[in-house]
Length: 460
Image (tube, rainbow, N blue to C red; front, side):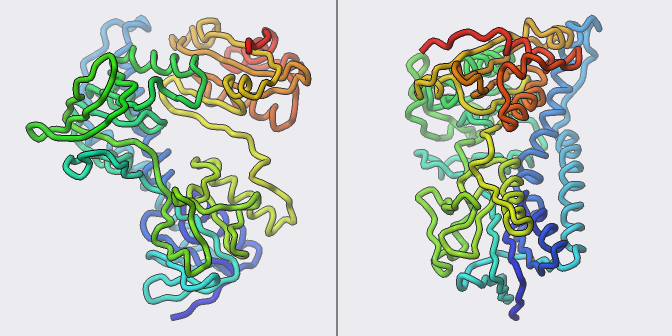
């Protein structure tokens, strides 16, 4: 059966549903296709479930630290991973079901379930249905990548998706890959009671961030008893007595890492391989991403790519911003562009690491004359009062224009406090402006004006 719409949206991740809402409110007819779970990665296997698990792990960690808060010996407690999972699943289901209910009852929107494949630049097939539209928005998301490791097909392993189904706590979890996924799962499972070994090819954590950031995060993890196997250049997998072994080549310790469970956290890949792109005149790049312009249009007029499949950001906030850009340009006569947004992100270890703009290394590489301000969390009253003094606040400023170039915060509340700096950068405000701000006491953010008041030349 053939159906005609003003627009097709493929995928109900972060960008798709909101775009459907805007388009239908403007009088467009919309066909929306989802083959699995409404809400995409963020709701089902990303932000929502992992942050729910992190909250449970934080509670367990705090209970163990009771004595340091003057509460005497903490009462004994056990971690029931099935109950932890049940709490997480309840939160996920509420979000997913609410989104599905909204879309299925949205006037002007028809929901189809299944896999969509192009039959032409203006048509896609879902099962026996052919959907036609002059505007097609691909919001197909991504999935955990399967790295080409020797032995990978002979060893059972978990991904960032399948690990969420565990109901029994791993005795010893080996994690290969120390990106955001690897770091967050390492700490949360350690706090829940697992022994954890983190294997990473690079000689240090966070190779794209500054060395002081990497050192601070490594110290946080090591202090909690997580074993770091860095510089693991030759990773291979095998089994011994039914348990996984990760063979590494580390200068300090070349022995294999042995554990009860294995999590592979070595990146993600876009879900573009089954779209029959050629029938629409599209081709993906070597990594599977669809090339888009500043307005998120692909090389084929009338087809846009939003979210994880376009290679312009792999975050919920960038996917949602993709929706905002497309909606503004199509419906509001706007001229919004991808390059208008600042690079912002956070890794939710505890305390978190958040950043905006350029790193210290990037500023040096560009030869930009710069000033730097830095304050350890041991000098932030709110952090001291909370008993969470790990990390620091660091800001970078152009030495000639006084424009803010970037900032990094490793520390309690840093994922929230950094928005003071993000907003100032969007407003193109200067360090001088930041120094005149008065923030609320006692907060972590109140020290940001002080950091801007302690600028020194950045050594090149």
